[in-house]
Image: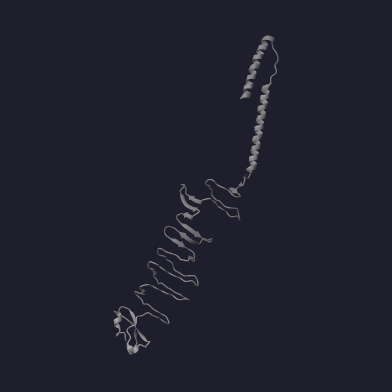
Length: 297
Protein backbone atom coordinates (compact mmCIF):
# COMPACT_ATOMS: atom_id res chain seq x y z
CA UNK A 1 0.00 0.00 0.00
CA UNK A 2 2.88 2.34 0.79
CA UNK A 3 4.45 1.69 -2.64
CA UNK A 4 1.24 2.60 -4.47
CA UNK A 5 0.86 5.79 -2.42
CA UNK A 6 4.43 6.73 -3.25
CA UNK A 7 3.90 6.07 -6.93
CA UNK A 8 0.63 8.01 -7.00
CA UNK A 9 2.07 10.91 -5.04
CA UNK A 10 5.09 11.32 -7.29
CA UNK A 11 3.25 12.30 -10.55
CA UNK A 12 1.14 14.84 -8.69
CA UNK A 13 4.20 16.60 -7.22
CA UNK A 14 6.03 16.53 -10.58
CA UNK A 15 2.96 17.87 -12.33
CA UNK A 16 2.67 20.81 -9.88
CA UNK A 17 6.39 21.54 -10.06
CA UNK A 18 6.39 21.35 -13.87
CA UNK A 19 3.44 23.72 -14.13
CA UNK A 20 5.19 26.26 -11.93
CA UNK A 21 8.43 26.06 -13.92
CA UNK A 22 6.61 26.32 -17.28
CA UNK A 23 4.82 29.37 -16.16
CA UNK A 24 8.06 31.12 -15.19
CA UNK A 25 10.80 29.74 -17.45
CA UNK A 26 9.03 28.14 -20.38
CA UNK A 27 9.13 24.50 -21.63
CA UNK A 28 11.82 22.20 -20.11
CA UNK A 29 12.72 18.42 -20.25
CA UNK A 30 12.32 16.33 -17.04
CA UNK A 31 13.61 12.79 -16.19
CA UNK A 32 10.97 10.14 -15.51
CA UNK A 33 11.76 7.54 -12.72
CA UNK A 34 11.80 6.75 -9.00
CA UNK A 35 14.49 8.48 -6.98
CA UNK A 36 15.39 9.07 -3.40
CA UNK A 37 13.64 7.35 -0.50
CA UNK A 38 10.90 6.01 -2.78
CA UNK A 39 13.47 3.98 -4.69
CA UNK A 40 14.98 2.60 -1.49
CA UNK A 41 11.49 1.75 -0.20
CA UNK A 42 10.69 -0.19 -3.37
CA UNK A 43 13.96 -2.11 -3.25
CA UNK A 44 13.34 -2.96 0.40
CA UNK A 45 9.91 -4.45 -0.32
CA UNK A 46 11.23 -6.41 -3.31
CA UNK A 47 14.04 -7.83 -1.16
CA UNK A 48 11.59 -8.70 1.63
CA UNK A 49 9.34 -10.47 -0.86
CA UNK A 50 12.26 -12.52 -2.20
CA UNK A 51 13.25 -13.51 1.35
CA UNK A 52 9.70 -14.67 2.10
CA UNK A 53 9.62 -16.68 -1.10
CA UNK A 54 12.93 -18.38 -0.25
CA UNK A 55 11.81 -19.14 3.31
CA UNK A 56 8.51 -20.55 2.06
CA UNK A 57 10.31 -22.70 -0.51
CA UNK A 58 12.78 -23.94 2.12
CA UNK A 59 9.93 -24.84 4.53
CA UNK A 60 8.10 -26.69 1.76
CA UNK A 61 11.22 -28.70 0.88
CA UNK A 62 11.80 -29.47 4.58
CA UNK A 63 8.21 -30.69 5.06
CA UNK A 64 8.45 -32.89 1.97
CA UNK A 65 11.70 -34.34 3.29
CA UNK A 66 10.45 -34.96 6.82
CA UNK A 67 7.10 -36.45 5.72
CA UNK A 68 8.91 -38.51 3.08
CA UNK A 69 6.69 -37.38 0.22
CA UNK A 70 7.36 -39.24 -3.02
CA UNK A 71 5.50 -39.83 -6.23
CA UNK A 72 4.29 -43.16 -4.76
CA UNK A 73 2.92 -41.84 -1.48
CA UNK A 74 3.82 -40.37 1.88
CA UNK A 75 6.00 -42.00 4.56
CA UNK A 76 5.00 -45.64 5.09
CA UNK A 77 1.85 -45.10 3.05
CA UNK A 78 2.16 -46.10 -0.60
CA UNK A 79 -0.42 -45.67 -3.34
CA UNK A 80 -0.64 -48.72 -5.59
CA UNK A 81 -2.97 -49.87 -8.34
CA UNK A 82 -4.93 -52.08 -5.92
CA UNK A 83 -5.27 -49.45 -3.18
CA UNK A 84 -3.18 -48.19 -0.27
CA UNK A 85 -0.19 -50.07 1.13
CA UNK A 86 0.85 -49.26 4.69
CA UNK A 87 4.16 -50.52 6.08
CA UNK A 88 5.12 -50.65 9.77
CA UNK A 89 3.01 -49.76 12.81
CA UNK A 90 0.06 -47.41 12.33
CA UNK A 91 -2.28 -45.64 14.71
CA UNK A 92 -5.87 -44.70 13.81
CA UNK A 93 -7.49 -42.10 16.04
CA UNK A 94 -10.92 -42.34 14.41
CA UNK A 95 -12.96 -45.09 12.73
CA UNK A 96 -11.41 -46.82 9.72
CA UNK A 97 -13.62 -47.71 6.76
CA UNK A 98 -12.17 -50.18 4.26
CA UNK A 99 -13.36 -52.93 1.97
CA UNK A 100 -10.42 -55.22 2.66
CA UNK A 101 -7.53 -55.20 5.16
CA UNK A 102 -4.72 -57.71 4.81
CA UNK A 103 -1.04 -58.05 5.62
CA UNK A 104 1.87 -58.67 3.32
CA UNK A 105 2.32 -62.27 2.14
CA UNK A 106 4.00 -64.32 4.83
CA UNK A 107 3.53 -61.72 7.60
CA UNK A 108 0.90 -61.67 10.37
CA UNK A 109 -1.71 -58.94 10.85
CA UNK A 110 -2.00 -57.47 14.37
CA UNK A 111 -4.81 -55.39 15.89
CA UNK A 112 -3.85 -53.73 19.16
CA UNK A 113 -5.92 -51.45 21.38
CA UNK A 114 -5.67 -50.12 24.94
CA UNK A 115 -9.32 -51.05 25.64
CA UNK A 116 -11.07 -53.18 23.06
CA UNK A 117 -11.28 -53.93 19.35
CA UNK A 118 -14.75 -53.79 17.79
CA UNK A 119 -15.66 -55.01 14.30
CA UNK A 120 -19.14 -54.04 13.01
CA UNK A 121 -20.95 -55.25 9.89
CA UNK A 122 -23.56 -52.73 8.70
CA UNK A 123 -26.36 -52.89 6.15
CA UNK A 124 -27.47 -50.25 3.66
CA UNK A 125 -29.24 -48.32 6.42
CA UNK A 126 -26.09 -48.28 8.62
CA UNK A 127 -27.72 -50.70 11.06
CA UNK A 128 -25.40 -53.10 12.87
CA UNK A 129 -26.00 -56.69 11.74
CA UNK A 130 -22.97 -58.42 13.23
CA UNK A 131 -20.60 -57.23 15.95
CA UNK A 132 -17.39 -58.74 17.31
CA UNK A 133 -16.00 -57.16 20.49
CA UNK A 134 -12.69 -58.27 22.01
CA UNK A 135 -12.26 -56.63 25.40
CA UNK A 136 -10.10 -57.10 28.50
CA UNK A 137 -12.73 -59.30 30.18
CA UNK A 138 -14.27 -61.34 27.37
CA UNK A 139 -14.73 -61.84 23.63
CA UNK A 140 -18.31 -61.20 22.54
CA UNK A 141 -19.95 -61.99 19.21
CA UNK A 142 -23.40 -60.57 18.43
CA UNK A 143 -25.12 -62.06 15.39
CA UNK A 144 -28.10 -64.12 14.37
CA UNK A 145 -25.97 -67.25 13.94
CA UNK A 146 -22.42 -68.20 14.88
CA UNK A 147 -20.56 -70.87 12.88
CA UNK A 148 -17.10 -72.43 12.98
CA UNK A 149 -15.98 -74.38 9.90
CA UNK A 150 -12.89 -76.31 8.93
CA UNK A 151 -10.67 -75.54 5.94
CA UNK A 152 -12.64 -78.02 3.85
CA UNK A 153 -15.92 -76.25 4.68
CA UNK A 154 -17.23 -78.84 7.15
CA UNK A 155 -19.36 -77.42 9.95
CA UNK A 156 -17.65 -77.88 13.31
CA UNK A 157 -19.78 -75.68 15.58
CA UNK A 158 -22.97 -73.70 15.12
CA UNK A 159 -25.13 -71.73 17.54
CA UNK A 160 -28.33 -69.70 17.20
CA UNK A 161 -31.46 -68.97 19.23
CA UNK A 162 -32.92 -72.44 18.64
CA UNK A 163 -30.03 -74.90 18.98
CA UNK A 164 -26.30 -75.47 19.31
CA UNK A 165 -24.81 -77.95 16.85
CA UNK A 166 -21.44 -79.68 17.25
CA UNK A 167 -20.44 -81.09 13.88
CA UNK A 168 -17.14 -82.66 14.92
CA UNK A 169 -16.87 -86.43 15.05
CA UNK A 170 -16.01 -86.36 18.75
CA UNK A 171 -16.71 -83.89 21.57
CA UNK A 172 -14.20 -84.12 24.41
CA UNK A 173 -14.76 -82.54 27.83
CA UNK A 174 -11.48 -82.17 29.76
CA UNK A 175 -12.82 -80.50 32.92
CA UNK A 176 -12.31 -82.30 36.23
CA UNK A 177 -15.99 -81.83 37.16
CA UNK A 178 -17.27 -83.00 33.79
CA UNK A 179 -20.14 -81.28 31.98
CA UNK A 180 -23.36 -79.97 33.48
CA UNK A 181 -26.52 -79.99 31.36
CA UNK A 182 -29.38 -78.08 33.05
CA UNK A 183 -31.85 -79.60 30.57
CA UNK A 184 -31.98 -82.60 28.26
CA UNK A 185 -29.24 -83.74 25.89
CA UNK A 186 -29.69 -85.71 22.68
CA UNK A 187 -26.80 -87.80 21.35
CA UNK A 188 -26.37 -91.17 19.61
CA UNK A 189 -23.44 -92.25 21.81
CA UNK A 190 -21.88 -91.38 25.16
CA UNK A 191 -18.41 -92.89 25.67
CA UNK A 192 -15.40 -92.29 27.87
CA UNK A 193 -11.81 -92.20 26.68
CA UNK A 194 -9.88 -95.48 26.70
CA UNK A 195 -8.99 -96.60 30.23
CA UNK A 196 -11.20 -93.85 31.69
CA UNK A 197 -14.43 -94.14 33.65
CA UNK A 198 -17.80 -92.90 32.41
CA UNK A 199 -20.14 -91.59 35.05
CA UNK A 200 -23.66 -90.26 34.55
CA UNK A 201 -24.92 -88.52 37.66
CA UNK A 202 -27.78 -86.30 38.79
CA UNK A 203 -26.94 -85.09 42.34
CA UNK A 204 -30.36 -83.68 43.29
CA UNK A 205 -32.77 -84.77 40.57
CA UNK A 206 -33.59 -87.87 38.56
CA UNK A 207 -31.65 -89.22 35.58
CA UNK A 208 -33.80 -90.37 32.67
CA UNK A 209 -32.53 -92.13 29.54
CA UNK A 210 -35.02 -92.61 26.71
CA UNK A 211 -34.74 -94.10 23.23
CA UNK A 212 -37.50 -95.33 20.92
CA UNK A 213 -35.48 -98.34 19.67
CA UNK A 214 -33.63 -99.34 22.82
CA UNK A 215 -30.81 -98.40 25.18
CA UNK A 216 -27.59 -100.40 25.22
CA UNK A 217 -25.13 -100.19 28.12
CA UNK A 218 -21.94 -102.10 27.42
CA UNK A 219 -18.69 -102.43 29.40
CA UNK A 220 -16.37 -104.56 27.29
CA UNK A 221 -13.33 -104.65 29.61
CA UNK A 222 -14.67 -103.85 33.05
CA UNK A 223 -17.57 -103.83 35.46
CA UNK A 224 -20.86 -101.99 35.30
CA UNK A 225 -22.48 -100.76 38.49
CA UNK A 226 -25.93 -99.30 39.15
CA UNK A 227 -26.37 -97.96 42.69
CA UNK A 228 -29.34 -96.18 44.25
CA UNK A 229 -30.43 -95.15 47.73
CA UNK A 230 -34.03 -96.42 47.78
CA UNK A 231 -35.33 -98.57 44.91
CA UNK A 232 -33.90 -99.94 41.68
CA UNK A 233 -36.54 -101.08 39.21
CA UNK A 234 -36.15 -103.11 36.05
CA UNK A 235 -39.45 -102.93 34.19
CA UNK A 236 -40.48 -104.22 30.79
CA UNK A 237 -44.01 -103.44 29.71
CA UNK A 238 -44.37 -105.77 26.73
CA UNK A 239 -41.24 -107.94 26.79
CA UNK A 240 -39.05 -109.74 29.28
CA UNK A 241 -35.98 -109.12 31.40
CA UNK A 242 -33.09 -111.49 30.75
CA UNK A 243 -30.13 -111.96 33.08
CA UNK A 244 -27.57 -113.87 31.03
CA UNK A 245 -24.43 -114.66 33.02
CA UNK A 246 -22.45 -117.60 34.27
CA UNK A 247 -23.06 -116.53 37.88
CA UNK A 248 -25.90 -114.42 39.26
CA UNK A 249 -25.38 -113.27 42.84
CA UNK A 250 -27.97 -111.76 45.16
CA UNK A 251 -25.98 -111.54 48.41
CA UNK A 252 -28.45 -109.54 50.49
CA UNK A 253 -31.66 -111.46 49.93
CA UNK A 254 -33.71 -111.97 53.13
CA UNK A 255 -33.40 -115.42 54.71
CA UNK A 256 -36.43 -117.23 56.05
CA UNK A 257 -36.43 -118.66 59.58
CA UNK A 258 -34.21 -121.70 59.85
CA UNK A 259 -34.96 -124.89 61.69
CA UNK A 260 -32.57 -126.15 64.35
CA UNK A 261 -31.97 -129.38 62.46
CA UNK A 262 -30.77 -127.64 59.31
CA UNK A 263 -28.58 -124.92 60.85
CA UNK A 264 -25.49 -126.34 59.12
CA UNK A 265 -27.12 -126.66 55.75
CA UNK A 266 -25.73 -124.38 53.02
CA UNK A 267 -28.22 -125.20 50.28
CA UNK A 268 -31.15 -122.81 49.92
CA UNK A 269 -34.17 -122.46 47.73
CA UNK A 270 -34.99 -119.20 45.92
CA UNK A 271 -38.59 -118.25 46.54
CA UNK A 272 -40.79 -115.45 45.27
CA UNK A 273 -43.80 -113.89 46.90
CA UNK A 274 -46.93 -112.85 45.03
CA UNK A 275 -45.79 -109.23 45.19
CA UNK A 276 -42.50 -110.11 43.45
CA UNK A 277 -40.30 -110.16 46.54
CA UNK A 278 -37.46 -112.73 46.57
CA UNK A 279 -36.18 -114.56 49.64
CA UNK A 280 -34.18 -117.65 50.53
CA UNK A 281 -35.46 -120.72 52.27
CA UNK A 282 -33.62 -123.84 53.38
CA UNK A 283 -33.88 -126.57 50.81
CA UNK A 284 -35.56 -129.78 51.79
CA UNK A 285 -36.87 -132.93 50.24
CA UNK A 286 -39.70 -130.81 48.84
CA UNK A 287 -40.26 -127.09 48.40
CA UNK A 288 -40.11 -125.11 51.64
CA UNK A 289 -41.37 -121.80 50.20
CA UNK A 290 -44.93 -122.42 51.37
CA UNK A 291 -43.74 -122.93 54.92
CA UNK A 292 -42.05 -119.50 55.08
CA UNK A 293 -44.72 -117.34 53.41
CA UNK A 294 -44.82 -115.13 56.49
CA UNK A 295 -41.80 -113.20 55.15
CA UNK A 296 -43.92 -111.95 52.24
CA UNK A 297 -46.19 -109.86 54.48
